[in-house]
Image (cartoon, rainbow, N blue to C red; front, side):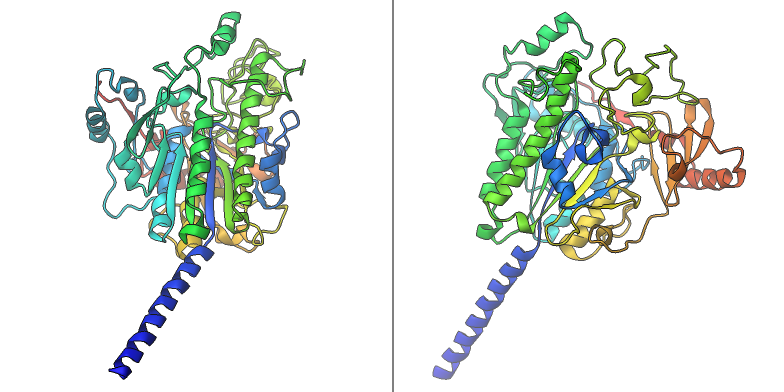
Length: 522
């Protein structure tokens, strides 16, 4: 008996030792926070050259991490998010579609929750059993996963879809149109409606886009606008960090924070002191700059919380955005997306197009590139990307490697599980983050409202303006502003890339417009 007891004691000790070892191994995995800005042109950040708006907290991530210079998102919000979560490029129209927003304005106002979910599920392409999503790769690797803020996918979603994508916890919006206001009367927490007392506007107090004395009064009429959405979302995120400290839970976390900022129409509780007395800015520009400033402040709050919890050293922070720049602060003679404000010439998006210089965009949000959101010029799809990982990344480093946000799924998969997910368009670039060499995709393709664009790893870009059946060829390493169409001098390269583009679009040029938007019947 004593012999048996001794064996059992040794076995128990070994078992508990193994469990403790597994727990320690689990906590050694890095925590990950992905901050996903909304309509943030990279030129709005100090790390990418912004002069008027200071962004010290985001710049710190770049100064102590790595900044990527050649990064593609998508052309606007919904396909960008679907691409991010699936690891597939946004011309994959058979992989995902978009359900038009607005239906959640009918919640308890003509439709109940089940009716809304049924209508969304009837239109949205359902996930297949073997589909793998961004949150799922971390969850399957033992991470606690959470998502905060703007809806992750489409213009209308459901708690069932969010859970299927791998998120254990969610707080935020289910409807894109409601995200255009910043004072929601309700949000959702794990599928449950959370009322926000003091916010009374069904449309979340969406403001008019155009500037006028009347619209200024509407923006600053605070009746029914008690709680700013980003404040309550940040509060929930910071509380989640407190409750999920890996030092206590022995479980790393992966947080996705798709913020509303600085998407318009413009709304901010107060103008930041940096801009109040700046006579060179219009009121709209001051308010917009304050939204960018708030985004930077929120990043600082997250970093401070991680420092307070003593886990910053083992936390990866990734900062990026969904699509290119959008000018929400247009006033007479300033920031026009449609015409040269000095000559009055309307952009034809063939020989003439938006530049900050010709449109008098005081912030130069697209960092000197051509075009803006929804276009297949570089300014429509290029985004910022910064990685911070103390002790792993060479501080102040940068990379010109071409990457895309749909590469994040496999990059995070490699970090969390040591492997990549097969069958994805995206590939891991973890080695580049760590100062080594990664395998580079041969090309990146993006959709747009104008049509597709394909960029090779060498820097050749083929742009197709579908409605006008016009192809243009650029060599980006020598033509950052896309001013020199080289198609006549490089007919062989044009034919090569045209053939490749058509094949990638699965032999249908219309796939270059991206996923379809479907209207629920309500």
